[in-house]
Length: 500
Ligand code: NDP
Image 1 (tube, protein in one colour):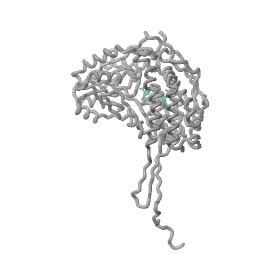
Image 2 (cartoon, rainbow, N blue to C red):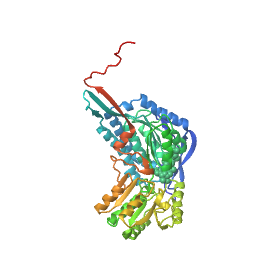
Image 3 (cartoon, rainbow, N blue to C red):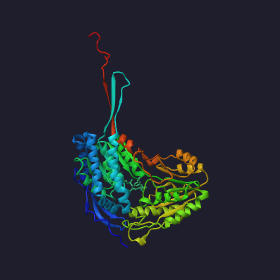
Image 4 (cartoon, rainbow, N blue to C red):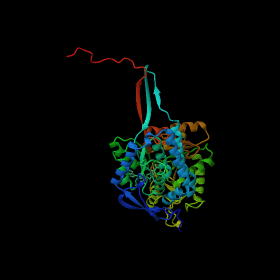
């Protein structure tokens, strides 16, 4: 079986610096369509010199270009034009995104690309409401605090939702007057390369630059560059550690949006129909590849068998296959290596005494793409590796609990702390559990409701800093305090002694 390509992408993908192809200098890297395993394009890697040129372009645009000093109404107009550009090219961007990620085209059209456009509108609206502060409590003085752009932002985007996640970073960095250099994942550069090219028509020269290549090569050169003032990263926890140490040497602040092993707690007091729907969405949407997945499903023992049975039955009926088909619910994983890594957790679960209740296999009947059957396992304890490690695939780990205290303890017994899900119609349980979670986000009786005004990010190894309206403003600006005497008071006079 061979699925049709969503689009024929350009043969070669390069970075973009001041709107022109970047210097490259690195190796050529294949880009594959995950639904067929066919190579669809070739990426030209940017080496450290090419990264240097991109940072220099962003620096020049910041130091000498119009962007940081543009009035807010003008900046809003440009952000709105970015949104329009995305919407005008929505179908092309969705298809390019599909061609490198294997994400379902319908989802890309309805959610990712719309979100990408909205990211620009959101930050345009946000800056229209931002204001500085002034303090006049000390008689005779006025002190103002304004937020000023920081400079050059390095933006590192992952492969699981490249356009939706990168545009959050781009829109935020630009809205607050910065210039930037974006590095997508080398596996999924297609839609972002096109988007950056399209945005050159609406942004001043050098404001948004693109470099491509492997994380340890291009990404590492970018985050360690002395011309960078902020680093915003979404990706794995181990990469986050490397990035924070590199940026730390330059005393550059980072936001790191990292991994998760989020507890999805289903209490007997829940609306079980809704909880099962939410559990399926929480682990199988986005082809199972999402940091906020509810991958550790903890169920109160009295309803454990019922919930597991209903979940398993529905998981077995998920329509796995062609990302272009309207009925598909689960597409391929992003790469062959990632598929193999996800499936390696089947043996790991069994070695820890776990049992596979559904899936756990490749779907080679679907051809050479990176398809995996929706998988659920039960394990005897929360210490099992599949209950502790981020798998980042369509792989749910089930565990029973006997009391609210035990649910809370198990949910928090992890190195991660991104999201917790609580399903219960008993208000005291909801209040108690949500108040006890050591996670940056708690979703009650709903999966994955991201409110952009609210901070999003993790406790513990799930991240550093937050993304969202005011959090991004704090991150992408510096505060400058100016004090002026309004009615200049007399100053203490020094140096009026006798001359020596
Ligand atoms: P990474 O964290 O390595 O990749 C994310 C981004 O960081 C990519 O653009 C990558 O480039 C880049 N990168 C990698 N190393 C460096 C570096 N030293 N300096 C700068 N940039 C770098 O994710 P992986 O692909 O390795 O995935 C590993 C695991 O991470 C997944 O299995 C999953 O558990 C988790 N993950 C979490 C995500 C989230 O949303 N929080 C997103 C993606 C992964 P390139 O890909 O080109 O090498």
